[in-house]
Image (cartoon, rainbow, N blue to C red; front, top):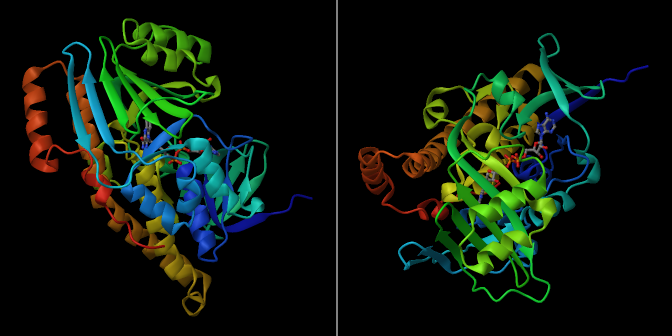
Length: 398
Ligand SMILES: Cc1cc2nc3c(=O)[nH]c(=O)nc-3n(C[C@H](O)[C@H](O)[C@H](O)COP(=O)(O)OP(=O)(O)OC[C@H]3O[C@@H](n4cnc5c(N)ncnc54)[C@H](O)[C@@H]3O)c2cc1C
């Protein structure tokens, strides 16, 4: 006999946003179920830089102290240009560290009951049972899971975003290789974010701790051939960096192959975020599913953490108020109102973030000097020409 599974809150995707949301809800005494298609927590993407706003969110989830033990504080950004033999330093006064994705997702998961995350569970279709007012999810193994509230945290190809009829993500003509490298004897690099413009690519390096560094290589010509094999990705990336200082080339050559990936930079249009519906009934989205953006301001992951804090706060006001949950119909209505508050609070913040990222992505990929001038003007007028301004944002308490 097939048993029917019904949950109050189901979250699709066990990445940064899904786990942070589930942990936030758990901290408020609210159960949820995370469905993750991978068999284990994914570490692809290697690492992310986390600024003050991200740390504030992690502190709300009570995992900030653990994660600070996994990373060294960074002092700012150093820009170098091999072609011009030029350097430029920007000191960052707030908190800035680079976290291994593995440390981040494992720490978030460690503080949740194990049964709250279901691995190897890929959702393949979504439906809605209007009579029972329930979302009906079908998984790859043919099981059916029903949910009163559904949050799509499943990243770039979000099914929930499609159900909400958000326009599909776009792509910049920009590709990025990411990975990290371990130096068993310790690396000698200083604790700052280094960005080097080489002949064919932009190289970035951020120390995580005394032995590990995260690197990325950004380039503009679509790679020819199949880049799903990490060996091919490594060779292609090393070739791009030919002629660069040996410590740069070596960091890629010696990288941890399991964390190596190459992706085209995707973004959801800021205009779509401005006017499209980000919730329908008791269904919404968070993290990249809602607002994937280019990596140029280093805020995608932190914005996903902020989403989790705000959504936890909005939902917990409704779900933790038994007097207000007298009938199912009213409860559903109130959850809808809570999701509206979430969307209302996040929309202006996300518009600024995605718009700045969009302008920078267009600036670095356009060949027209006129367009470049207009974009530089807009970036200066709207954002003070500063990439760190988002890091001061305070998303509040859970
Ligand atoms: C090159 C690059 C550099 C970046 N650098 C930074 C940085 O320095 N700082 C920063 O803050 N951010 C950075 N980001 C952005 C950051 O990595 C993302 O914003 C963040 O990972 C989003 O997390 P998420 O949980 O929303 O999505 P994801 O990490 O994509 O997680 C989605 C999860 O959903 C699962 N899933 C998908 N479909 C299904 C399904 N149907 N059923 C079940 N599970 C499913 C996936 O397996 C995955 O685990 C960078 C991104 C890129 C590409």
